[in-house]
Structure formats: structure tokens, C-alpha cells
Length: 250
Length: 193
Length: 194
Image (cartoon, rainbow over all chains, first blue to last red; front, side, top):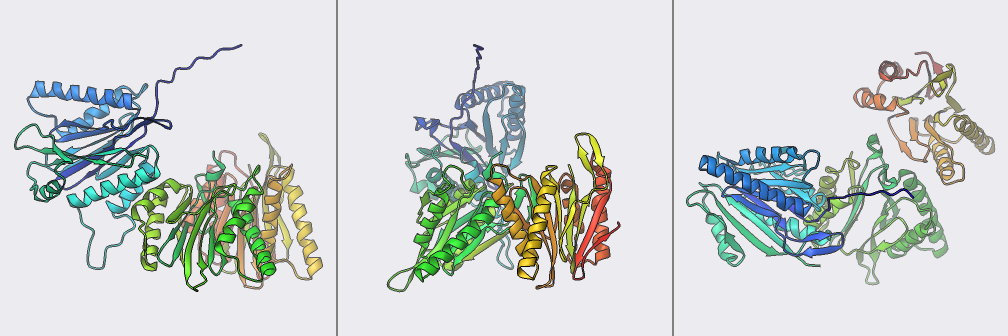
């Protein structure tokens, strides 16, 4: 009898991530369910991570690879801080992620990355990557198990695809923070409703540019004091908040 | 290569307030190659029922013809128009007849049922390729863009839509879903009852 | 594999099919007519599995003729195409399916319109303004997207078809060789030299 052996070092852990760039803010979100097949391993496994005061990374796919990758990116950013006494700019982090992913071209990290944050010029930015490092800067991106459910919804609501503005008007160039947050929450409640690998909890990271007036956000914050937590380290720089919400657990 | 994705195409149906809508794309392809941008997938069954047939195109035509025949026979025997509920079961049994050599079609139905009071109640249903019916209360989707349709419809649809708003909702749902699907698109058609 | 094209224009349809019969790498024949004349105003280009093609085409030819004898009048193009499609669809789920792809073109005397149907061996049928089968379709369809004009005269239509044939002859690895071209309009069927 011929014997064959195989070693499969990968698995798929479900979940979905999503990021949207505003004019002077960026929103990066992910659900917290981690599953394998039909089993839920945990209802709280974060997929979104603060890298610096102006960069947040969402990682989706094979959770073990994802966690290892974030760990290594954080380590490289710490080395950068020690060498240059400042945080790495967002576009540089994006390029760093590309080289780190491509370095493992023939034994890849089985993860889709979405990097969100604030660019050096103060604009909100989203960078999306494939597992081997192809990347581009975009206004919005969904990835993961429910990408096919969420991305066409985002095309419609963020890019206004297939929508015609009323005569004499144009589509807004940038969406407001409350609008973006509503779209993110709607996207995840929809995905939770129709996809079994999405649910349990939702973590929404919000990164604000240094110069931004936080009045609109403070209104939202006042109404959701127990849900929102500030993660900013340095003073009078960019500010990061995380908003945690429940999603259906069935 | 999946048979269900050989020709491409998608259908969606939605319930509104005293109305229903059904919409589809118009593409016919051979895998990635586009053949026709005018391929009908939604067919009128009675004055109050539309039937969408996404899936293998040869079976779209065969089933369209078979349903026309069976609905005509029903009308002659019963001396009345078939009701949407009865038609849904006709679809189901027609597909289950071929349980072990199925038609590769996932039908979607939309219709209006006449109540004893005289007013019309919206009705939608979908079926898998062997006739398992799904009587949804909100919306049903099928075809190569089904996962995209689910996502957009779940985000845009709400209960109690008036005909004009239902038209906009189903149109936006279909358009944005097929724009992310290589096998669907190339034109669209929407019916509101 | 063989290539066939067809287009409709103002009051006519043109069908073209290559004339090569090949087996493996060898061209066995170069003057085969692969377009059947099914009636006074009906044409059918056939391609696919050698053997099945002629067998099925002749079966169609005789049944269309039978329908005309029985009913006095010939089947109009939509009815003929529907019948042919159904034969292929039924054949698909039989013990020995025909592997034949067709382009059915006709002039409908009741509506005074040309009709063109793209039909494949599965029984898939589409009503189209222009169509192609075989490797030639990968070149012809994009050309026809650009150059097809439903209001074009026969001469312009033939010129458009010429583009398709020239492109296939130029770019396809195995040149199909000569093409047979037939036109159908209100006056009936005729063969033309390109």
C-alpha cells in the first residue's frame, strides 16, 4: 500500500474586517468572532490592533498567522522608534507591510491586511493588502468572510455607485463621521444576519487627525460613554478611540 | 467549473407594502465569455405572478416552456388563474421530479395573492435546484451574485416600502451586487407589481 | 476546431462558416459546406463533434421539411429555432447526446425582420444581433461589438464579416482557410463570394 503524508499548516478562522477613510479621520473595524468550520473558538478575539497613535491594523484570515504578523509589525515599529525617536509615518508602515508580506512569498502569512490611519499630510487613509503584499491606498475596503456581502454595499454607500445626484447637486466628496459609523455598524449587522462566521462583538477603531475638531465625536461619545475608550498615548497628536458593540451571537 | 455558474446570471425579489418586485440581470455567458446582453431570465406566469430562473441557460428555456404548459393545463382544468402559493408548489414538484438528475436552476417567484377581502397580499418565494421552497417575508436572492445580493439587500431593504421606494431599493441592490460579479450584469430588468 | 460567424442587418442575415474538415493535425478536406439551407428563408451553420454535426443537421433538415409538407407553410424562424433547441436540450440528457453548436439565421416573412439564434450543444439559445462559435468567437465578438450596425446594408454587412474572417485568418494559430458565406433576406437564400 502506498502511503502519503501531508502537512497542512493553514486554516481559515472566519470573521470580517472593514475600513473607511474620511477627510481627516479613519475608521477601522472588525468583528470579534473566531471560528474554525462550524465551531466557535472564542467570541472575543480582536482582529484590529493599534500600531501607533496614527495607525491601526486589521488582520483577517488565518488567526495564528495574523497575530504573529501583527506582533512582528509592532516589533519593527518599536525598532524604528528607537532608531529615529518618532513614530513611523503611515505610508511607510504600508510599504513595510508589503516587504514583510512579500518576504514570505513562498510560505505566506495567510492573512488579508487593512491598514487605516492618518497620513503625514493629515488626511484619513486606508491601505489594503493581499496575502503576499500587493497593496493600494483606497477610500474604503472590506475583507474576510463577508467581503462579498459588504463590499458592494460600501460601493453603493461610500462611493455612491449607481446613484445619480439630484439635479444641480453633487455627491459629497467626504462623508461625515456619524454617517461613516452608521454605515460600518449597518455593514456588520447585515453581515452578522447572513453570514455564520460573523458576529459576537464589533470593535470600531476611530483615528482622528491632529487638527480635527472633535465636537461631532464628543456628541457621540457622550451618548456612548461606556462603549468608547481612548487609546491615545502621546499628547496633542493624533487621537485613537475604540468603540465596542455587541453583535448577535447566534 | 460549476454547472450553476456556467452561464452566469442573478435574480432578486423583494416584498413591499402591498407590492412586490423582482429583478434580474440580462447576461448570458459561456464562463468568462459574454454571449448575449439581452437574455431574459424573468417570465410572466399569470397577471399576478413573475418567475425568475437563474442557472444553466438551457434549463432556463426548458423550464420556462414546461411551466407555461403546466400552468395552462392547470388553468384549463381548474377554470381559474393559479395562485402564487399553488404555483410555488408546482415549481417545487416539477423540480423534485428530477431529484436525481436535476435541472440546474434556482427559481425565484414574486406574486400577489388575492385575499377574500379583495385586496392583494405580496408573495415571494425561492427554491433550490431540487425544489426545496423558501417562503421569505423580506427578500430572496439567487444566482452567481447571490452572496453580494444578500449583503446589499440586507443593508438597503426595510419593511413597508411603497412601490416607488421598492423599485429604487431592488434596483440599487441588483446593480451594486452585479457590478461586483464577473458572471452577472450586462443590463438589468426590474418588474414591480 | 471550426469557426462560424453570423450577423443581422437591415432586412437580412449573413452566415459564414469555415470549409475545413480536420482530424487531429491533418486537414482532411477544404471545401466542406457547413451551412445547411433549411428552407426558403432559413439557414443553419453547424459545428462541433465530427459525425454528430452532419447527422444532426440532416435530421433537422428533414424534420423542418416534414413540418412544411404537413402544414403547407414552412416553420417561421422562431418556431424552427425553438424546435431545434428542444431537440438538443432533450438530447443532452439522453444516453448519447449530440455535440453540435448552431447558428440559425432566417428572414421572418410574417414580421419582415431578419432573425438570428445562437444555440450551443447544451440547448442554450439566445436571440442575438450577431454571433459566433468556435475559437473564432474570441476574435469576432469583440470586432462585432465595435463594428456591427443593425442598420447596415448587405454590402456593409459583408465588409464587417470580412473583418472577422481576416482577423481570424491572421491571428488564429491554425488558419481555418476558406469560408462559405450565405445571405438570407426577403428574396430567400443565396450564396455569396467574399
